[in-house]
Structure formats: C-alpha cells, structure tokens
Image 1 (cartoon, rainbow, N blue to C red):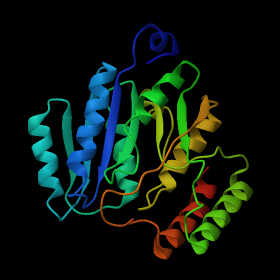
Image 2: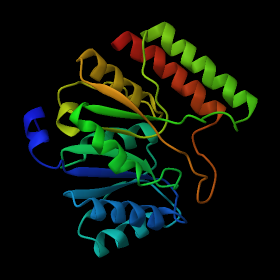
Image 3: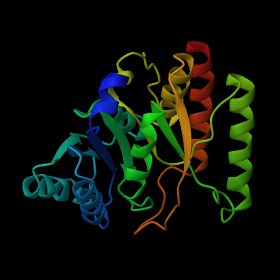
Length: 238
C-alpha cells in the first residue's frame, strides 16, 4: 500500500493474536478485538498464532475460526518461542496494517483505533506505557534499565517502546530480518531496520491491564540472558 492510497481509503487491518497456553483468556481476547474491529468498520482479519499450546487453547482457536469468517489460525506443531510467533505475525497479514496482541488480555482492544488514527503521519506506531515499571519488583526494574542502557550504547537512538506495535504490512517486505532466537529481539530488529530505511515512526501511550489468568512466560532470567546474547548477534548483523 502506498502513502497516497492509504490517504484515499480506510486502511484494512490484521490483528495477530499470539497464543501459548492461554485457554482461559483466548476467546475473550479474540471476541473483544473482533468487536472493536466490527465497530470500526474497516476491512479486517484476526490471525491466531498458536505456538504449540498444550492446554486446549489450540482447539479454542479452531472453534473461533469456525464461528467467525474473519478469524483464521496458524498452528506451530511444537512450542517455537516468542521469536517465531513474531516472525509469523509480521508476515501473516493480508491487510494494509498489522498489529500483534498477546492472548493474555493485558492490552485493551481500543488501542487499535487509537493507533490507526496515527497513520496519516506514520509508517509504524510504537506503544509505550507511561506507568510501566512502577509496580514491578526492583530486580525487574534493574534488568530493564540495564537493557535500555545496553541498547543505547550498541545502537544509538532507539524509540520508546513497550507492548503493542502497528505497522504498514507491505514495508516488512522491504527489509531483511535475520534474528532467529526465541525471544523478542526480532521486534527490535524490525524497528531498527525501519529506522534505517527512514520510515516514519511515532509513539503512542497505552495502558496495561492485569492478565486475565496465569503468569508471564517471558520475564525470567533465562529469557533475559537469551535476549542479551541475541542483542550482540544482531549488532554484528546490522
């Protein structure tokens, strides 16, 4: 989609819902997102990326696809990790804009129209959470600070980002993504490659809700160390 075409009609929207063992919240999250998309009256689709779940949420995803024409499912046969989910999420969309939501319910679907409004001036919108970190444990805050400082040293300027992003789907095909790890570094690489292409990136504040159930599967020492290793690999590749 070119810039001129995006200004002449409503952009269509893909929402990739990232699911790994979120049986208790998946249906509610998908139906909330679907309700907002229908209300917006843009052409849309929801793609549930099921990362080898073992709790029955893969079956729930298939049920949702059978019930709603706008929903389809991509199944990973085994758990491949967050990195693989993001890689599929970046390219699975058939619409003009793509965004990715976790299936845990932490982000309000109203973020979608909030972000879409910014695309008269942007090619990518990055969410940030103004209150992020205030209620986290001191060790988590310390690791987060270390990560930010390391990224600044290794890559220079990096826009503020926590949580949800949205981007023009065709632009993903203009960059070569090389990160292959299980963590979130692939997100960082996409942002950096958009920056180097001089695509327009803006920030938008969002809220953060409590998870509907369960606990985070990514905020642990093992994942932090894995992400740090991938950071150094990415620096060599850019």
